[in-house]
Image (spheres, helix red, strand yellow):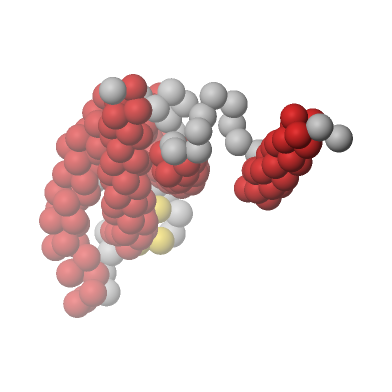
Length: 209
């Protein structure tokens, strides 16, 4: 065998061993996305985390919106029955004053429903601001409006307004307690969702930049 042939054989063996080991290491590392060198792994992990958080928060907000719509329907039914005199006020008491502005509380939920499918930040911000105006503010006013009646019921056991035989102030305070919790969680989850959307947007800008 000539020196040249011996040299070529050794080179072939070297390349075979080197690239064979490299191929084995690559296969152990797992498949790699086409067009990437693996350096954007953390970015992709962060995007996946934000996506999962967004999906979870949207689910919670939708559930709260549905509960709120049910509460709204109950109050709207009471107002409608009272205004149209469909039943006697001894059966379903006339609404308290705070219930009328609270009917506008359906607006934040509508904006919230519209914001979720396409991650519309503007609609979500409007939903959060209007929730304070049309949900929380009427409930605060309602708590103050009904407090003297609740105090009289507690001290003297006297009630003058009823809803299907139950004290109207007791029923409405129960509704109010549920509504406060619903709106509180709505605003909390909406704020977290808004932060997740902002972070995702900033990450995309950095990636493009």
